[in-house]
Length: 391
Ligand SMILES: O=P(O)(O)OC[C@H]1O[C@](O)(CO)[C@@H](O)[C@@H]1O
Image (cartoon, helix red, strand yellow):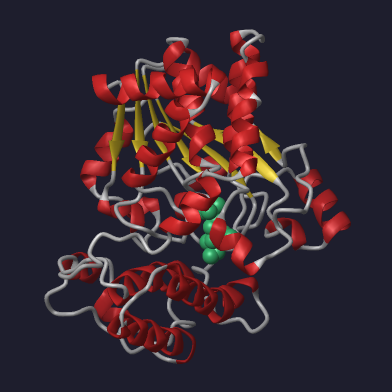
């Protein structure tokens, strides 16, 4: 990035900022919700209550000596942050460690009966089984009449706007679901994406949320496989529950099973996905780095090799975008190509805007957004983009 000034990494310390609100208000709200999700025993409830106090008023505490991933967190910088206020370490670090500590509190890593029980599963399932999801699946029947090109474009946009479905975001912004999406994209490289997909063999999709985002992601992959636009899809999910609704392998199975059980075109998509998982043309990976508190510029070699082997890698959602470009307050006109120059191969971002980080806007777009909304467009979840580098 020869000419791009690099702003500092975002912290959550600025009073009144969206980021501080996430740490000070969203995190305790998530703990309250988790506390009600299952009949947790007294030990778990106590651990959750302690975390609720610690994460808003205290400093980062260590993981247990026997934690299976202690060395990994140390390699990611744990020792340098212990004893520091949650507000004074990088925001991404603070958020990621919060979810790791939440899973510790509920006994997710065991030993014990709560081992492997996703504390967010009731919320995820409620969404997957909702009337909204049912209506979205029923709408697939109309798509069947359209040309493959039109279907592809509709499914790409379904996957993009599926990113509005984010249970963590809705928890702290109750009006998010009702606010109308603004259909014009703030950046639209979709032609470049289709051009890259024309000669593609392998597509990597780095998933974001389960349920109403993962379902359209899977539909998009099924379409590309069915139309022989790609030979293989690699779906990266989280290795454990994270940011409330982020997709894990269990969520992939729930989504595919829901599709298979659906009537009409949705059921056909489901059977296509089932077959693709069985024959290895759809592969799911849950790399530990997918839930790391670090930007993708710091990814390990094996993950880099995975992305390098893909014709195109698509990053879904706001958090993945923050990690792709670096969690920094870039000037909005900073070229997306500059901040992703480190990435091996063609990379695309499909994201609705739910945090301050943004790159790749034209000066005109930034001026128009700011004139109409101040800085609210950055975090409101009503705006979206498709950005591509490397075609
Ligand atoms: O599900 P997404 O799109 O990654 O969004 C995650 C949300 O959490 C945040 O990281 C804030 O915690 C925002 O970036 C966004 O509101």
